[in-house]
Length: 259
Image (cartoon, rainbow, N blue to C red; front, top):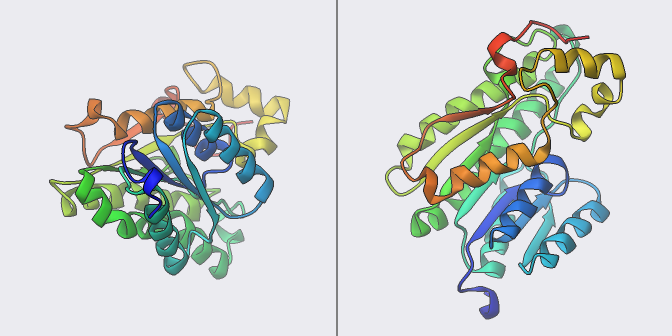
């Protein structure tokens, strides 16, 4: 354990923290006084840049490349983060992937990969951090999607995995009570690398906006703010819930991609 980092600040651990929602979450928590441990899958440069941005907030950063679908790599990351930063107060299980469009277009191998990262990976992250979260009476936040709450005929595997994430949050909320609170966030259309293909296509972007009562796409910072709330004392009596962050999109969701 690094003695200089073992006391004082709270610590958040984020999977998939070098880009998009994960990066925005890391930076917001850092600005609120948390030290940050985050994992990433590919791209050392974005990870290094995120770490430098965290340190520019005056906080400590620890990061490591892992495959979030692997329980052993996730457990090692959690152990090393604890040793480096001294404690874990919150986990944001954010790592996720999408897959081929169309229910017939997803191979059995791709189906398993989507579930392994989007659902199993979230379970592995929380499971590895449970001893720490019990000691700190902390919080786990699972990043799901409104795809897990609505019909998604073109992304069946992704939607099913995210529905599983919502169910996982509810079940873990009971399993880990009373020491640990567990909640999920269900973002809608958020401007990230994952959605860049649609956002960069003007007609598709405009069609999607027409279905969002707030009149705009979400930004990663919108989801990060929800994660910070759920980790805070302001949500101390909230557990087993799913906070939808979609600008009202799911209130009038239309089946299929909006173009």
